[in-house]
Image (cartoon, rainbow, N blue to C red; front, side, top):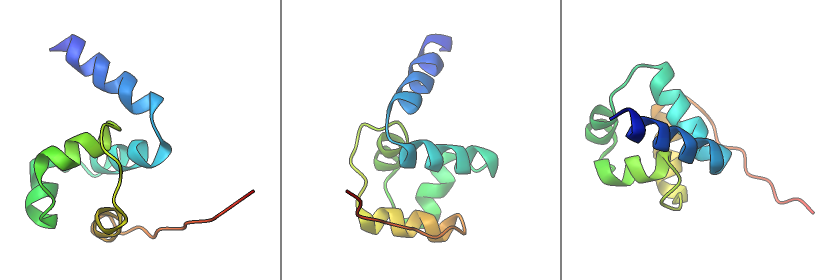
Length: 79
């Protein structure tokens, strides 16, 4: 299991900062992934894949999660 934890940690660090932020918010608030799934209606496998960067983030799911964690979304187009 230690190898799996290390692999997940490496995946989180190597993928986009939004995935990392979602994971860190959940861990900081000490909320199990299955509770987030139950409370938001987002399937557990989707949340898991999102947090480790295996799944693209849908804006609708990101909006739900931001509201759940008490955060706002700021999207910018830059050159």
